[in-house]
Length: 306
Image (cartoon, rainbow, N blue to C red; front, side, top):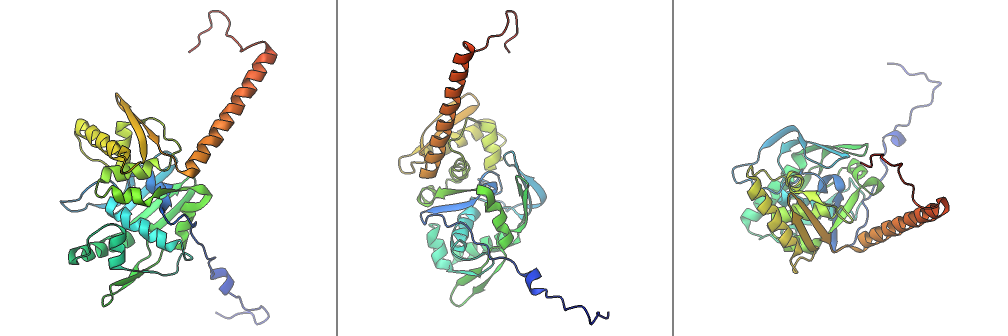
């Protein structure tokens, strides 16, 4: 194909360049992820002793406003342990650049042993995270791709280099992400249901009442026995309320509903205070309006009141 010699050559450098995007710099004692990961069953509270199912464009349970489709080998909460540490490493660099770590160091970060089988397990997690494809929509913002973009391992030194896709940052946009206390999650060890509830509740300030059935679905529990499922959830809430963990001050369950009371983080406390102030101003304006109108309006006699 011939080009017009009078036309200047097209410079594709600027067109193909991608702006360097960096994740928010959350505190060192916190771990963070998009709400779409914390408010869905993408990392279910399951132990796959009989092998992990392979899903094909499977819709994953999530809260309203979030849609998650997944293709690949199923994840679990131990995969999330690793992924949270990878995101924590990646936050210090522009997305798309390599982040390096040692297998030994990563295993220590997530409180795992460091023997041969543990190194083998870690490699399987990284392969799984780089192979599973997510299609996530959070309030009109959509990301489709893998959670990590593959990587490189030096078999001699046991060091890895991985990178996170820059486009993944869209799920952190507009405040659509939350942080958790790293030490609380580590202290939960292998209490996988408590871990799933921990990240879910961390996205609320404060959480409202929840149905047991709703929590079971969002935690990815697959026990068909609803009584056993309920007992599993209550046990997990007790663990979160333990003094060792300190995530919940207390919880109450009545019938099919459970209500939790958080020890709020500083940011959650500020959010609660702002909301309380806003509600107080609304009530003050309503009282002022009622006093001007001669009191609150009343329905005519015989009018249904709902």
